[in-house]
Image (cartoon, rainbow, N blue to C red; front, side):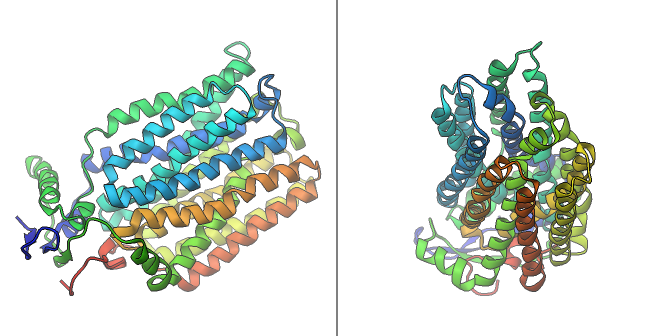
Length: 487
C-alpha cells in the first residue's frame, strides 16, 4: 500500500501518494492501446459529424424538407460549434466534480441521441436544434476524454499519443466522406433519404463505443485528489498486476511521492484565480492557440464543399471524394510529426506547425484568387497545408490539457475550448458562408488571410511564452492545487 493517510477526519485528511509516478513509469502495453482506442474514438465521431456537414451541403440545399441556403449551411456549422462550446463548459465543470468515467458515458449518450434525431429533422429549425445538441455531446466528450487520456498516458509518450489520437478525427472525416458518396448515390438511397441515413452512421458507431468503454476505470489521479485514495490504489495495483502476469518488467519510480490534501471539489473562485491570475500567461497562450486553430479549421472545413461546388463546379454528390486526400494529409500530420513534440519539444514544434500553416494558406489563397490552380491542385494544396495544421490544432488541445492543475484540468480544457472555439469557430463558418455567397474569389481570399494571420500570431505567442512540458509528469508541469509541501 503506497497511499498513506496522515490525518484523522475523512473530510480534512491529507496523505502521501506515489500513484501519478507509478502511472508515468508504466511501459506501453495492450492496456494503453485499448484505453486510447475506446476513448480516443471521440475524435473520429467529431470528424464524422463535421465532414457530413460539408459533404451533405448540396443534398441539404436540394432537400424539399429543408431547402437550406449557403448561409443556412454556415449557420448550421456555427450552431454545431455553439453546442460544443456550451457542452464543453457544462460537462467540463461536471467532469472535475463528479469524475471522468460518469461523464464520458453521459456525453456519449447525448451525442447518440442527438445525431440520431438529426436524421428525422422536419425543417431547418429542428435540424439546427439537433445539430446544437450533437455539438454539446461532442464538446463534453472533448473535455472529459482529453483529461482522462492525459492522466493515464505515461509522461514520455504524452505528446505523441495525444496528437495521434486527435488525428483520428480525420479517419472519421474519411468515413463521413465515403458514407456521403455512397448514400447520396440515387442507386443506393438518393438525396433526401441519403442525408438522413448518413447521420445514422454516428449513432450506430456511438452504440459500439458504449460497449468499448464499459471496462475503463475511473482516473486514479482524479480519485486521489477527491478523497478516494484507496480506490485509486486498487485500480493502479490491478493495472500493475497485468504487467506481472505477462512477465513485463516495470521500471523503478523516478519521482517522489506527493502529499495531498483531500477535497471533494474546487471552488469556482479558486478555479478563476488559478486560470487567470496564477497561470495568466499560460491562459493567454492556450486561448490564442485554440482560437487560431478553431477559426482556421472551422472556417475552411465547414465550407470547403461550397468552394468545390460554387467555384470549381464539382457535383455535390461527388464532394466526398475530395475529402479523402484532404483527410489523409490531416491524419498523417499528427501521426508522423507527433514524436517530434516529445523529442524536439513543445515550444519549437507548436510554433513551427502554426507558422507553416499560416504561410502556406496565404500562398494557396493567392493562387485560388488568381485562378492559377484547378480543383485537383486546390485539393493537394489543402492536403499539404493541413498536414501541418492538423498537428498544430492537436497540439493546442495538448497544451491546455497538460499545463493546468489536475483539479481543474477538464474545466480548463472546457474554458479555453469554449473561448477559442466561440471566437474562432462561431465566426469562421458564418463569415466564410457569407463570403462564398458573394461569388467573389477576392472576398474568399480575405477570409483565408484572416485565418493565416491568426495562425502566425499564435505561433509567436507559443514561441515567446509556451511551456516546455515534454517528458515531464503532469504534476511537475502544473503543481496540484491540493499539494502540500514539496513531497
